[in-house]
Image (cartoon, rainbow, N blue to C red; front, side, top):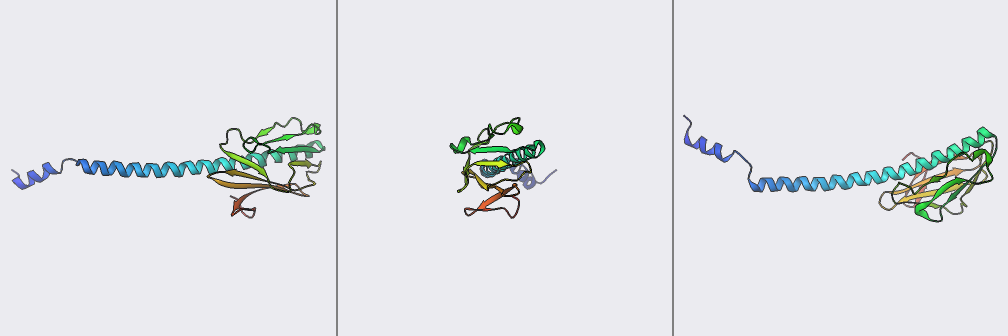
Length: 174
């Protein structure tokens, strides 16, 4: 037989009080809101990185086609409407016509593409893969930041960078 004090103690500790359940639910809700916003920012940063890599890969493919065909490849990057920018091969490049047009605004969220002055948006990859002018682009997402892409003359090297305080930096990968 149990003492009466132990029996009373046990019956009081059998469940949770309403206050304990409410505090637990509030804590779970707060942690959920924090984790969802963090996850959403990470997805937006990944979309921005994906857009930069996709453009870099497309340009590298155009450069490779110029080298393979031993013919120049004329590339036009149109940013007249920043949310619907596109990169395409112009009609004066028969060797590279098989390459598709890259629509940068499709499916990547609110990413704006802009040319950095004094870039013109026109690029010619020579049969050796070199270029005659520099080209620099910025890819911007309102909440995820900014990425930069640069094609430098004369070698036609394509570099991706990160923008910090309005300056594009290409010294480390992002």
